[in-house]
Image (tube, rainbow over all chains, first blue to last red; front, side, top):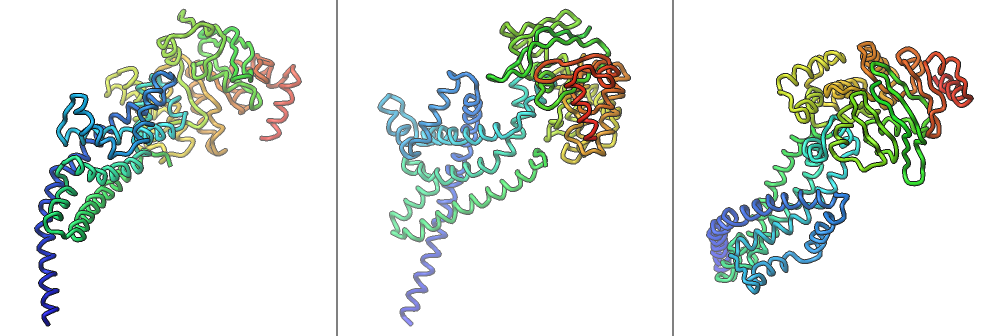
Length: 231
Length: 249
């Protein structure tokens, strides 16, 4: 009887802790995790687009820096990149707050990975589409913007969604440079309550919910862009 | 004379595809190019609007515009060359993310900066002319091959080119759809469009064209009025080809 009571008390305590920790974590997600991912992804896509077009250039001097950038970013760990920006740059006299540091590191990281996706998507559009653009009088840039990119967008949605979902989860690394995002909140509460399993599981579920919601958005966007593909 | 080309030469690496070919296209005339596959006829057509860059060749247009491919060409010259002709492709190459109407409007609105409403009216007229007045708002994948190719023709006409180029416009079509596309091309010929058509359709060449060129191995083997080239060919290679192609039909 005593034992049963004890467990029941423990269970209520656990539920209380989960509920108490919920708002700080959700707040961390709303204030940091999600904005950090969105802003970094947006900047990253712009970097990626420029990099992809540079890598498709026939001029070697244009291709080379883009190739170097992609190789350097893909060849080094994200955590190291984050530390270089936050802890390394101050040595050179550039001191940034945790959040801008994280945005810079994540944008550069996404830019490299997404540029490969965009490059492959552009290459996957049949050569005849370029030629059709040229024969109605378009130049390279107009054909790219009006004809190729709209079609490449549809091709790149699934892999880019993957990149975005990875990014959401990777933002947890920002906890290492003191950004008080979702996982940092979980760590802080766990440090005072010693309920590691409970709180980290709770954090995991919250990430999962965000990513699940994103995959639904992805499906909707894919369906809406389906007309962009020749069947 | 609309276009006169001298000494056109094109090779892909070591493969000489076009060997020193001369051609004159008269205004308002239809030139058909025939020949076995690999004879260089498609490459030749693509050289006419700069989709392929010849190594050598002197282009002289009726309006005084000249190009010499032994020199390095400026981007401006390339664009000017391209805008002289409209092209219809074997596999249509319609823009899959745009409706039939948007496909036709794209050139006038985006390249020629025409007023959208005017361009829309003209595009509607063109699509009506090729018999697609009830398909304007459909996407390419909702159209049959013959319908897609007719949109392709309307799209090429919309930029008001001096010269219409057709690269085997009916070769990708099911046999029962060939007629509808050929009759549109015939109609354009009657309207006085200047056209260069690469085709295997002997009866089309005989009835519609003013001048037939037979190519083989990168050379022009024989050329002249269709009556001569198609009915009384002098060259054995032309005779062989025509017998074979007639048997196949």
